Image 1 (tube, rainbow, N blue to C red):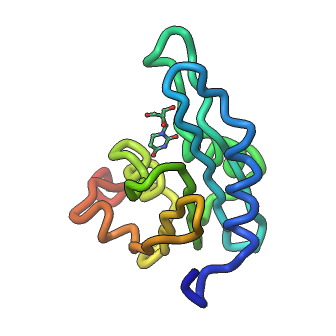
Image 2: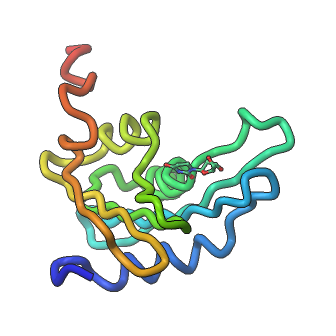
Length: 134
Ligand code: THU
């Protein structure tokens, strides 16, 4: 694991990944978000028999964060299984962008730990954001 990846985010994401409700994809994902206050919010994917109604781990973590009155994301970590690098899906990149700072790191982990770290701008360049609506 790169030295600058805090263990607590990885452990929090790994723990919540185990709670994922994934009877359809069998692909559990965990997400851990650190906010400006230092608190960590977690979420896992929650699938549904009506497939499109399922939500991603990042959406679940974001709901917990905003419901607690926190709105500033300073570090993100997601974890998934398999050999392939799993990064947040397109929709979740847009959701993360809403609350991220410029340069907020997004760590992509597998069972072996963090595999790659991106900034949110690398994952979602030239984003549509609140400034567009000003
Ligand atoms: N999934 C996430 O939770 N986050 C992502 O960013 C990628 C995809 C979930 C959605 C679905 O429950 C499962 O992974 C397979 O697509």
